[in-house]
Image 1 (tube, rainbow, N blue to C red):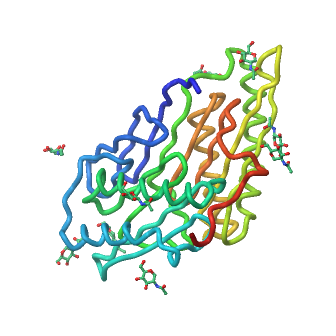
Image 2: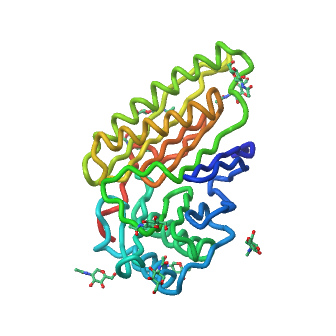
Length: 272
Ligand SMILES: *[C@@H]1O[C@H](CO)[C@@H](O)[C@H](O)[C@H]1NC(C)=O
Ligand SMILES: *[C@@H]1O[C@H](CO)[C@@H](O)[C@H](O)[C@H]1NC(C)=O
Ligand SMILES: *[C@@H]1O[C@H](CO)[C@@H](O)[C@H](O)[C@H]1NC(C)=O
Ligand SMILES: *[C@@H]1O[C@H](CO)[C@@H](O)[C@H](O)[C@H]1NC(C)=O
Ligand SMILES: *[C@@H]1O[C@H](CO)[C@@H](O)[C@H](O)[C@H]1NC(C)=O
Ligand SMILES: *[C@@H]1O[C@H](CO)[C@@H](O)[C@H](O)[C@H]1NC(C)=O
Ligand SMILES: *[C@@H]1O[C@H](CO)[C@@H](O)[C@H](O)[C@H]1NC(C)=O
Ligand SMILES: *[C@@H]1O[C@H](CO)[C@@H](O)[C@H](O)[C@H]1NC(C)=O
Ligand SMILES: *[C@@H]1O[C@H](CO)[C@@H](O)[C@H](O)[C@H]1NC(C)=O
């Protein structure tokens, strides 16, 4: 599919950065050592023990006994202040084999790109991966976040843009509720809404919402609320938008059916 280059923004606690993003955010230029975002970064060397534990936590991640839900894995390695926690989550429509492949290649990308940071996150097309010095079971973590979006309005007409935006917000709001209510192994929802943009045909907005399944319903709802706020802020009226943080994801596309058709959805299994 021929798409324009997305624009993007990544936010960590200490810096705000505007840069062009592909679906996999590319660069996190760090003023500090807290976060490595994306696969490639100027790194800060911590100590060898921590570094070894990052390797240990990531390389033991995709083991069946680390699976806490459909396509959701967490692991830890090391002790005390050097203990490293990792977790990975596959998009809810990925089949188990595709999930493992996505996480596995993300692990290598993250080890290569962000080997010596205290925390790092990587968002790939089908999964996301993270390591940090603290565990986050059930916690909503809003940072670091990544938002990428089209720079173009779907139309030059402001009434069309407004109509589109209303449909979009309604769709994403429904997906938010549905994903949050998903239960403790999978919090995932996809859907579509038709919208009139051109006079000669009807367009379709496709949306996806997902939370880490260990969040509470309210935690998930709050996280996706934040996501929706960010998409509204940066991509009001734009043809696509994608938000991700360690706890949840929200994405929409116009006329691009980017997730597996509902009747083919087979969530990544609890264990391989
Ligand atoms: C990282 O940044 C520091 C300071 O900005 C610079 O001296 C160093 O060469 C950079 N390292 C790499 C691998 O780019
Ligand atoms: C869980 O997996 C780890 C390594 O992947 C292994 O060392 C450990 O024995 C496993 N535990 C159980 C209960 O299977
Ligand atoms: C680094 O090494 C020292 C000594 O082993 C340890 O006390 C410290 O907590 C380590 N970890 C980090 C993240 O600095
Ligand atoms: C994981 O990736 C490595 C390196 O790309 C590859 O050698 C290995 O076979 C992969 N393992 C799985 C289970 O896909
Ligand atoms: C993780 O590292 C940060 C930054 O050094 C530190 O403030 C925080 O206390 C650490 N958390 C844990 C649980 O060790
Ligand atoms: C998009 O449309 C809205 C509403 O018409 C307008 O306020 C905004 O400036 C437009 N943005 C761009 C990038 O054209
Ligand atoms: C929209 O989703 C419904 C199921 O909710 C499905 O039946 C329909 O085919 C989808 N429409 C498009 C255009 O993908
Ligand atoms: C709808 O019409 C517009 C303008 O004529 C065209 O660019 C677009 O490709 C059409 N979309 C579909 C889904 O047919
Ligand atoms: C599921 O989708 C396939 C095409 O992808 C279609 O042939 C089939 O009829 C669908 N089944 C149901 C139950 O909707």
